[in-house]
Image (cartoon, rainbow, N blue to C red):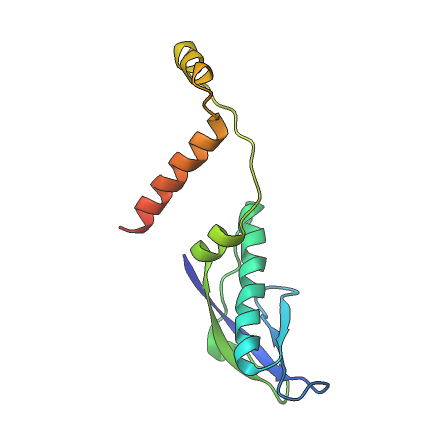
Length: 136
């Protein structure tokens, strides 16, 4: 899933060439970079982390405001950040959720005799299915 959010960029007074990035639609999402290019990357990382936390907690992700509705403070400018949430979640997603499983007794016996890790097998199977559906 790709998301876009407008972000406000402000030159840092303390560090020449550095920028602070604020994402108005994501409360408290602020980052900084030593150059404009780094500030954009840091803004994308901060916003992606903010959104991933919400998704992992089962919360709705705030919709992005229209670019033209965002007015930066004096001296700042607005730019769009593009978030690749699938790639970010694959790299940084860690929250595990416990699930109960019901299977026939004979299948449980087979799995135990073959030292099959149920959690690992389910994760690998669901990940493969997820990746297959994303390539369609």
